[in-house]
Length: 328
Image (cartoon, rainbow, N blue to C red; front, side, top):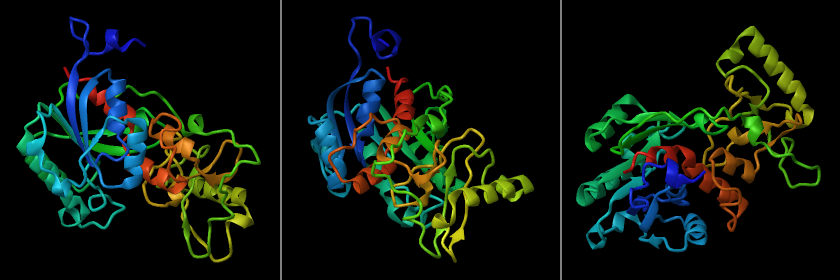
């Protein structure tokens, strides 16, 4: 597709909108990929990030990125005019899977985003975070002055990933459903490939959470008679090697659309799958990149563990690119 014909950033004189961007909590610079996909050129891209592995990925893929370091030490008065401010402040204290401390935990770094937003007064801004308690969401909404739009990455990807996006970029709409299932994302794995299967990572006493691509019941529906039957079938499928005596199993079945659960940054059983060949295994890094709509191989250059973490901490690129289409 020729973006210059289809993108609202294409001006009459044949030049795409060119922005100076500041990305807070930049991670692996998913924002830069999204900007490119939206057809927006970048004059300068400043990034605030402290994770050395994420920075290594960014500088490998986007060597012109200007790294500014820790947001707590960031003096934005020295920056040129910033036209677009983006960031996804830490979500651990807001997330239902986190510690529940809200603004008292790591998620208090939201206030650093607010500080910089007030100082810079950019033409556009975008703040992303997880679904959270309505009281916390309302505080953020009142502070930044715009209502969030909730978008599920399932519309553009094979995973369910519900996120709030607060932005003054006009034209907020839901992306068109691309009807991508988890099965579409899975690789064909040969027997000699280095893939972790369930008999290695199901120690006694642990809760194993499974994504099964071909099961039609949600986790909540699994409590019905039909759901219980499917759970028994899955246990039988996994076999004794993956169900050691004494282990406690909570089996998460996918939604009817066949999507995976949300990718997370910390080691988790949520990125396990019963694949298209009926094997219980861990999702590969390539599959995780696909679920986040990253370019394949984008996170190469750091360890597999750090790649998984970086991908889990990142954005679903095509969702962000869709939002950026409103920039004029």
